[in-house]
Every structure is written in structure tokens, then in C-alpha cells.
Amino acid sequence: MLDKLITYLYDSNANLPSNDEFYYEAIKEIELYFISPQVYSLLKEKGKLGNTPLFFQTRLKQKYQETLYQNLFIKNQTDRIIRKFEEEQIEVIPLKGVYFAEKYFGHIGARGTSDIDILVKRKDINKAKEAVKSMNFEIEEEFIPSHFHISFSREIPGSAIPLTVEIHWDILKEKTANFNIQEFWGKAVRLEGFQFVKTLSDYHTFYMICLHGWRHNLDSPKHFLDIIQIIDVVRDRISYEPLFKDAKRHQTYKRMVRTLSIVYRQYSILDKIKKLSSIENQFKGSMSSTLEQEKKGIKKYFAFMDYQFFSYDSLWHSLSEMRSWLLPNRFEVTSQLKETSKQRSYFYSLLMLYKQRCNSVVKVLGS
Image (cartoon, rainbow, N blue to C red; front, side, top):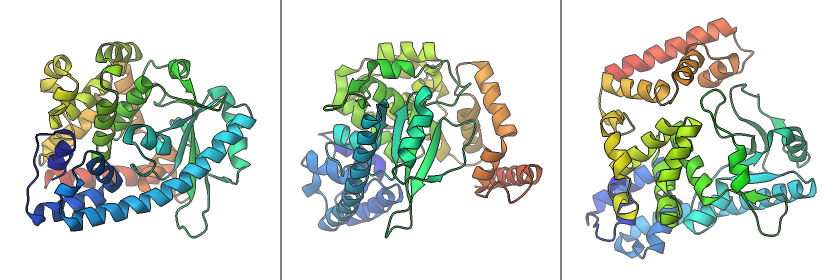
């Protein structure tokens, strides 16, 4: 359902089924993956909303308005944070979120977000922490050593879910690439009216979004939409040749090619917007992907293992990831089990994690 709908958003020659059943099923998938605002905004922008049934339009608009109200609040909080960083002379780059929605989807309510992500320089982490905590984000989440961010939350009156600020100093786990975040800072542009607040270039935004999609194994249509929308907006302002050249240097080449190959394979309309043929043909036979995960049984499991361990350019990076998966630290174990670190011993929790993984394999093989 969603493949047809997303293709329709970007292909002027595509048509959608006229039967209501298609739209009833589509709205279920849309809401399952929380992409109502993207679909509503893109249909409206491209003058195609009126081609869909009224009940479909009404439901999309309702969810869009809910997202808009939430995003307006998050925008207000994000603005307060970046003004605080400007006052404290801390260099900062807002990542994704409401600014991303405005720039690439055209409106603050056109893409849902639930937290605030910011990038700071490693040397400024402590200053950034104190600045965020001074704004009542005092609930500090337990730090996971292998991660590249720390999180602070605050309770929101009338909401069961707190608002979280994630302070990033990188966009990739250490020891998985030869990557230097300083390159992103070097091409960042000052946000109008600020000296210390910057925004990523289109090039590095695209780079980040592709890696973000890979990190989640493209497990949601929202990752596809993010990538497709940037391609559609920037078009020739980004060239794939330097992108893949940089990816080879950073040792993120397999991740970048894998991600874009999957997106282009699933949405062939992209070839009309921006060609990827040479890379796609080169990797056509090695794209174990989200598409492959639609298969049943053992192939689905092997597709995941290929993503988990063999998306790396370096054998050392693959071995490092294998070691982390087989012997994750306490924080990662408890996180995957959704328990607190003090509930059980590390050894017992590790056994429970292995049991959980074995049960998942059995379920996959039986499907």
C-alpha cells in the first residue's frame, strides 16, 4: 500500500486505486509508522490531496494538526535552547527535528518529531550539559559508553511522555568508521541572526540522514521518505561522486551504498529525479535489505545478520561489531531487555538476552 502511495507522491504519471479499501488499509500503515503529516503535506503541496477520498483526507489532516501542535511546542523549546547556547557561546547545530521539517518538507508540522537533537563539539560537552540542565532538563538518562550522545529530559505538564534533549558529539559509534565529525562543522552555515548556532549543509544533512536510515536498517517508511524528500528538494545541488568518494575515505561506503541502493530499488521513480545507476548495478547482487526481510524463514534472519555485521568497509569494524553484539556492555544488555541495570547481575541479564535472541530466531524460522 505505502509503496504505491509514496511513488504517487513523486511520480506525476502514477495513479492510485479508486476503491476505498486501498485507502482504509493505507491509513492503517501510515498511522502505524507515524507518517501522516508527511503524507498529508506532500499530497497537499503537489495538488494531489483532492484525488483521495474525503475520509482519508480528514484522517490525515487530523493527525497533521496533532503533529503541528506538538511541533510548535518543540520548536519553542528548541529556540530557547539554541538562544541559551548562543548566550553561553557554545557552538551548536540542531539535528533533524523541526528545522529539518521546515527546510526539506516545507512546514514545521510536515514531519513529526518527539525530542530535540543537537550536535556540539566534544570539548563543549560539559558546558552543553550544564546549559541544558539549567533549563530544567534535569533527568539524566544512564549513559551507554558505546553511544555518541547523552540525554536529558524534563516532565511536561499534561503529558505522560517527557521532553528529551539529546546532546550529540558525533553521528556514528566509535570504532565503526574512519570518520571525523569536524568535516561537518567545517561546512556548516551560521543560522541567520546567530554567531554560534549553525545548520548543516545540504550535503552533510543528506549524508547524516542516509547513515541514520542505515542505523535503523530502514525499518520504517519515514526513513525512505526522509531520503527521497531530500533528493527531490536538493537534486543537482548534491553530487553522488564526491559523496561516495568521501564515504570510502570515511569507511562508511558500504553503509551509504547499501542504503541508497535499497531506496532506489524500492522506488524506481528516483532514477527520473537523480540517477544512481552505476552504483546500483555494481551492488545489485549484494543488497540484503529491508526488502529481503519480507521473505520468510531463515533468509529473513540472514538478511538481518548481514546488515548487523557486514555493512562495514573494514574487517576490523565488522569484528568489533560482532564482539559488541556477542558481549554487549551492561548498559546495552539492560537497554535491550528494557530493565534497569540494578535488577539482575550482568551474567544473568546476558543469559536472558541470549534467550530472547534465540526465541526471536525460532520465531523467524517458523514464520
